[in-house]
Image 1 (tube, one colour):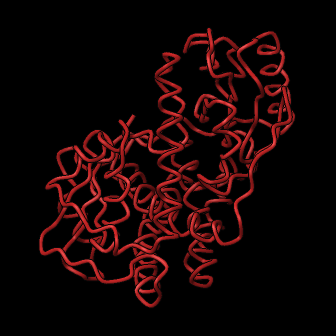
Image 2: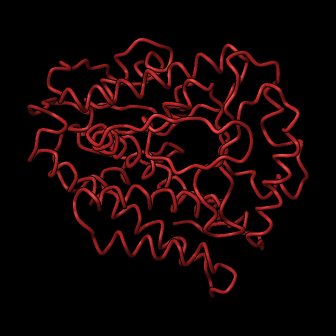
Length: 356
């Protein structure tokens, strides 16, 4: 691997700094009549590395422009502290269904205390099963890009590793705890919490990125084995004798392999070059994305165009409960996208933003 340059080191900050930023955000937006509520999701577990992830719950028709929600108008210190955070924008009707996207932990910063629908225990099971397929390949792909970058964004790497830890915990809940998963989660926490006190932390970061990718591939293989033993996902085997590519975003691909092997990571390394990045997974997971791409709406249409070669499936092979929860998530994302376009907002989609 060529010599790497490391930038965006963790800032020296304390929890109180985040409290001050929250107060500044609340004060700045208190007169904005387009906002119903502001929520924060996630938590600040590593001051100086953690960002603030915000949800702006908005009226159906708003008059604010894009720039008013990008946090560029708050103080430079506050902006630097939260610049890598996610800012989601959605109407009240979508926020009330937000738990159908993922099991999010959020709390209100200001505005109305909105009632949010809670999925049934059965729905929650299938939401989590589908979220693993949504998130794990995409996170492995991001980790692969970070590991192979000449310029390594340290804070972003630590945030992606932390996010990937949630996916590993989801997998552990389904498959049973894996020691390697726990090691990655613990090492990520150490790097995030004690960066400035570690000798040569950059070396440890690169090692952790590689270990996270390794365990990601292994657990995804184990997850396929688990799903094949039950009927929670596919009711019958999916057979396709050629590889299929899905471009998630610019030159970043999921390759659904027709070869059922445990060496997907080696395959990905062999084809990741010339600024093209791949995660290679079993084509057993392709029906999940084919179902999403087969729906009505601009997001699905965009996703379908990025599947090469296109390969429709019989949706009868997918468990109805799995499929229904997946379709509901896509429908809500499509409605969120319609809202953003109607109000001339270019960013802020909670899921499938790659295709917005």
